[in-house]
Image (cartoon, rainbow, N blue to C red; front, top):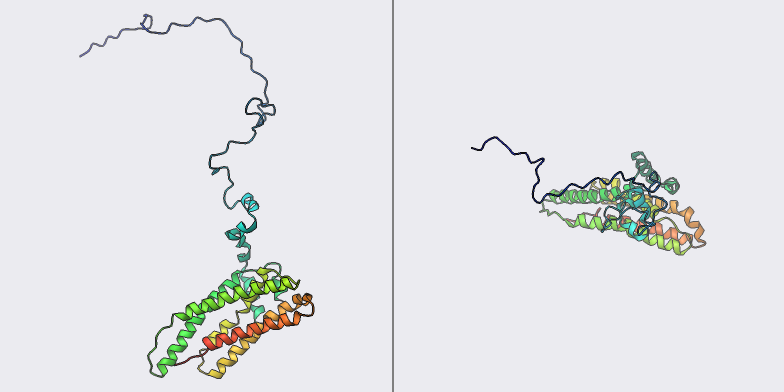
Length: 281
């Protein structure tokens, strides 16, 4: 074991040590005046003169504003904004009371006040769910009606998956293509209308077909024709009367435009009757 005595080297001269530096005396250090209370300094000089911006990252990851911030929304514009969720968010910002009121308006087509009431806040929420509901109602009602018709005649029944795809193509396609075409036509005749307003109007015009499809379970062919005709007439009147006041500015051809809109809605009702309201065993 080692002894507990240690040699003190405080006052010894150790080989290789740095000699102490003698005190040259008191040296006064003067600092130049600067505006440290303001940042950045206004009198910055040297190579970084004028460099008042904060340092930027190499990939600008942290220098960019956060997604969803106001500055980001202000910078987004043009066609790039069309592919963002924020561009469509205002059209889904509606209350239940607003949607219910617009559904009621679609069931009273002779008022012709839907466009006026929805002009300040047209929505896509109602049209989307109306079309989606129509797809499932048409597929389920059509399947149920054909199933019952086959069972009553003791015939074998097979499920037709094409009812879902066909219904989706008809309703989503109609509520998208027709307003787009009408938007171009109205712009050509110098009576432009808002595209979202047309989507909103045509979407709510299809609501009347939901109860019509539910009533088609009655196994009477003449009754189904009446239901399809009444639903088509109400839908066509709803669209035509709400666009009539706006299309009057198109000149003498406004009657042709309104007539074409009316007949197109009736044609939709006929197509739905022949494919969904007709049961063949």
